[in-house]
Length: 598
Ligand code: ADP
Ligand code: ZN
Image (cartoon, rainbow, N blue to C red):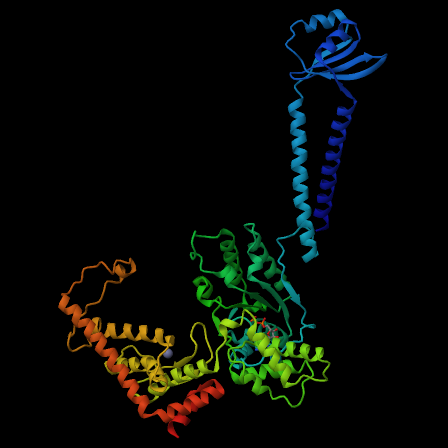
């Protein structure tokens, strides 16, 4: 490093010197030279007062005597064929032609400007590099921040409300603590872990906690830092980041906003983005290149797992993917407790009440509320933070621009609860259904709530009655809204399109309609893909087309009424599920069983 810097410095001095010398030279030349008219030059020549003459294409320079003093002169040449004769006659002691120097001076002059420009750029980068790193001028160095194991005090205790994610990460902590144990057993561990979830749910915090728990170095960079305006810089930074981590192994490398570099390579209008593509490729190379044995684990975070390039998700890369969800009411209480430790909270405050009022809030939102409340209390000169300040802080956060779109009112929460409870109860009471694993009214991606059914075993065949049950379950959300509120909402749009697609397949692909019979009237997939679906000639008659439509409609309607009648008959149980959901926001299969069987 020192050596190259020395050379660079000498080089810089040299350029500076040349520049100054050049400018000095042209300035002195300009100053001492007197520009005279050609006629004046000729008259001086006649008076034998010209001593030296140098002639080039577009200038004549020389020395002449003016008031008994020798001065330098310059004049513009005219077409004067007798000039040489005149000079001889005048006895000029020294005259000669000079190679056309003007273009050389121009070039030198221009080079001067170019050099000046280059230097200016250099200094800009020099300063930029100085701000972020020790090594001057090296913007290929990653800007990754490093946290020493000794300084990292964050552990799993600081992260609340995402127990499942913590459990999954515990393996990695164990490995980093006892690598030898794993080496002798020879199992393969994931090199890359992808944390996905909404912003502010604690992904960065979790990654730091893994490093903190394991007592290893933590390197963090954001995907957007890699994507610079110069092609190749991002890739160099990725390389540098991995090199630094390897030198400090065991270590965690954390890359936030992975989607900034890892977006699907062919996505987007206008084709590729060279720089991002190179950066992504370098990341893949690094991922493939290191062995878990080296004690490096890459943890990345994104809130858009759907846009990631499939190459990232291939085996041996980010093969462990962990959801970090928006916390439910219990999680929110715990997060509030974690952060309340940092302030002086009045003993009269029950944080679970605050949790109840903040559905849809992320960990970051909740941390913010606690902080905000402490500030409000301080302004009021209070001894401790009371309920009042927390309430003010909630209102302030809700009013914030980025929150407004995610707010769920109490009334909406109830509608969502009935919708999901409807799905769950029908799934519970119908035959031939997968067990309900979880019901939640916490938003997840675009869905406002969800009911998760998990199959008990792998299945390759689905019977007609199973599909019919599935249809009823899908439509039960809408049915529940209608039974309870006498009014329906837009919340069931996705359910309806899925149900319709199922019914269509039953009739057109699986031959499950008696009226149509065991025929396959499937559309050609390719043509659907090409968008020619609309103009395509049916391979069946118009009468059949009408029958198909009628059958689909009948199947969907039957399934809907079945769901509705189940819910009407079991309205009391439905109410009980909703009550529990409103209280806890997420309930699992056993809790559902308890309610249904009571
Ligand atoms: P993400 O990386 O998912 O966007 P962060 O980890 O940066 O979210 O969270 C920002 C801050 O919010 C954290 O530093 C922490 O104070 C708070 N926070 C978020 N989630 C949690 C959580 N589960 N438990 C405790 N604090 C949290
Ligand atoms: Zn639904």
